[in-house]
Length: 389
Image (cartoon, rainbow, N blue to C red; front, side, top):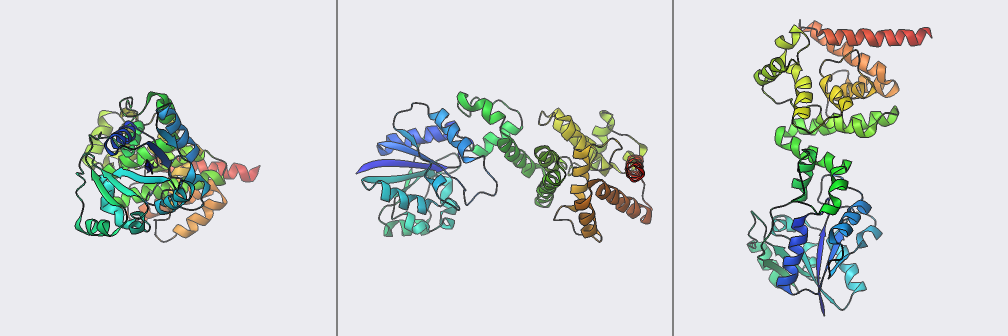
């Protein structure tokens, strides 16, 4: 029987950790070949990976002419989610003379019992849990007992692993950091310019900055903004990113917001000093640019003005402003009507949102921001000119 190592994953992007692990496992287990199997639709991921074709191309460039390595697009041919069980069944049909070793990190043992038909996987291959930083690969009792019952079972393999993950690579790309020590040179430019990689990197950054509730809201705004951009022939990509990052500074303490705004001249009116929570828009835009995360001025303006509005808001800024109001997690009296108005006419939706805010503040005897009033007046002017013409 030919001893074949199977290294599955999203490879979004492939990195030196993958390549080093493959080589270590091949040597220690004396495997004839390593077959890399990119997942088409990974069932355990809560994000949308880069297109399969792109990930396969990155793998091809990363492997080059490395002997004993192949790329299988077997999961591309199958509809639905990419379950390891189904892939192994198909491989046994195609390659009856092979003995398979499914290679993965030891951290996967923590969730192995959530894998589809995981017990039967152990009858189809050796499940190799290779050590990685933070995970020593010690087999839990329940897995050890199940492993003994199966034809192949689980192998805990100690290797000299690299502390690299695709999640970490995506975060470094989003932060515009140097990734030459993380991924092969041949794919650096493509990965750095990948929208999918950057978006997932932004999400990792936000998960560390925001509460679960605020992060969920940010994703809701991103999805709503992208939907509105599609409805009104806008820039869907920019809308999604601006919506995702709009609350970057939302959980910065008000005292710090005020300090940063004053120091960097980000205030526009005395109301900012009385209501420093409004400053998370301009401070967030400043922080994103200062930290090298975002330099697109259209996106930055949409983030900068989403708390107060601005008479010079372009379509993107208007989309983010109202998306913040009507994303699916919002639940307040009148929100359904706001959604209906916005879906019919973007500008009328923004105007209705401003009216709602201003009415609420007047009722609560709160301060009105001059930018909000000026934005409302500009939208009224545009509406009246449209009616007259």
